Image (cartoon, rainbow, N blue to C red):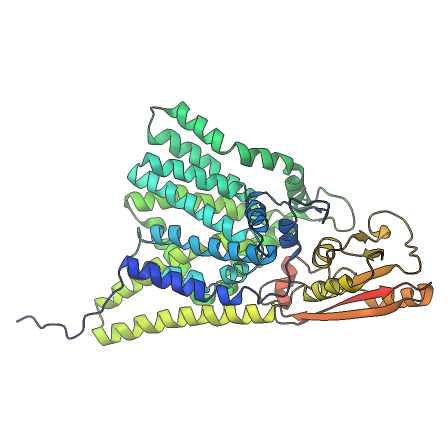
Length: 500
């Protein structure tokens, strides 16, 4: 006699998962669009991409894909920074679609939904979905292209290849790393069908003409970033031991995911990657020939530049979550053979709850501890709106100060040429401790020599749980900053009136 099971687990259907994930995504994004006080320098430069007279663009690689979407919102009359955050949030939610599709090739719909939930609560995706930055748009386009390339390899669909070309072009016009996809697009297009190869190559060239044109204008800036890491630049900040820089980044990118993606998710991902790499069949071959190879190139490309930020690891997020979900599903399947229903549910619910709770708590702590990043600069800049219209304003930082104040701001001369700074009576000087670490010394000089009066002062504090602003400029955007994740960083901005 076969004993009937007293309990049958109920699973959500794919449409139900869609609406549940959409609801959770909007619930964790829309109420927090104003949580950050200000924007990063890159964010302001994206907002002012088509207005170079408002904020001169420094040495940053910013492509027009994301700024073009911001430009649309600006001309619709929406607050530009709020529209930018909304675009980032929506892009972060759209990224779940290709993540779901690719996850369904490896795991059932229940685990695919869990993978998408872990992505929603991931600190990197959550934080950068609430700021004006192109990272989430790039992630959505990059992963969509990879999902379509896998579909081309497994199902031999020509339409999927054209969709991959389009998604890849969007990724490439958003961030330079999108060009990594181009060789796989070429190979998959040629191997898909020998007939009409020239038509495909022509279509690919047409779709990628825009990205190639825009990257050609930024090529020297891009090369400079790699020259800096290889020690080919000059000046006090020159990297004197490029191999040490390479090794430093190598171990950083191997160790920091344990912290950034949380230990449970990371170790499940490591075990899952080993299983996925050994899997047979078309999915296993696609993983080894497309996903694994692309991410090896992405990993190597991260080791050469001297700069480091935790957000640089965001492209690895779906890759590791997919592997972690595959390992979790394999683990739960093994338990079904040896454990009873109640014990299986205990293990399953316990492990999944721990993973999701850890991610959610870590993300919440990061949002709270870093929500005033550059807040002192924004608030001091807004004070400039109250000054007389004819006031001449100098600052040690132009893009953000000028953007938030809406006033013409001049860079202090000694910062770009060997010229002594001689302000006139009535001039305004705005200094930020982030750019002038010895603010107390400069403050005393302005008071003693120019009889300066402090009109306004603002302060901000961040705890860089995810690498953020650092008081020490030697630590800014460097791997060494990871050693100070739990040390509060304090910043000040002061507005002076020159009286002599």
